[in-house]
Image 1 (cartoon, helix red, strand yellow):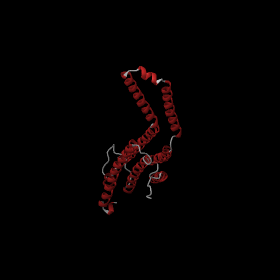
Image 2 (cartoon, helix red, strand yellow):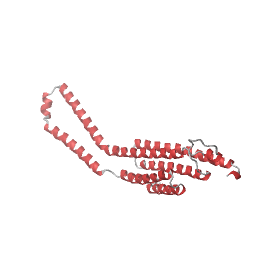
Image 3 (tube, helix red, strand yellow):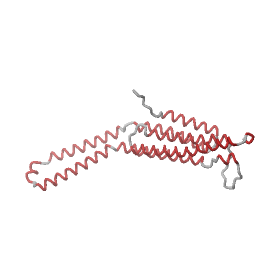
Image 4 (cartoon, helix red, strand yellow):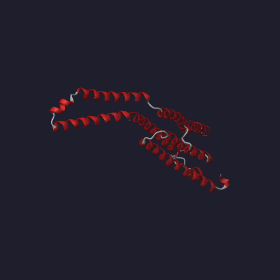
Length: 242
């Protein structure tokens, strides 16, 4: 029997926590360290939330089942009170057709109500997951903002800064590590999003998870381009200038 490969939430949480420690040790008191700390908290919350959402809402299911049974019993009770023989004896073809049309409409409405109640649990879970995925999407943009002004060409080539230029105190090695940490954080955000799709077959949830993964992949690609530029520029620098 083939093994089932699923993401381990605990290992992802541990990886995010370890990344936070690495960022805090390398860049203490930095904004990126605070973001990594917030991401570690979000990772723990995500693991707990995924665990809760994977369990059935038994109370809600019992309530829905009771409502369906009560509705069906009420319709049967009302139907038994009617003298159908007398109704059919006095009614003409037009009245019978109108009565059947009304009965069919009532059955359709009853079926729609049952379907609404039956899918209530799925819709509640979907709403909570989509809200959580929006939070992860926001995290990805925050990480991107932190690396936005990290320009490898300025670090290596220098140049006179302007009055509005951002501070760039990092060395070549520190910038490389900073960008690498940002790329790792984006990859872990995608893994946290993927946890929600692990045991869910909801198309809306899967589509939202795919959007988060596509976003983090695009943002990570920009960071890796900077890392490649940094590496190539470093190779072109004379040994005495490093």
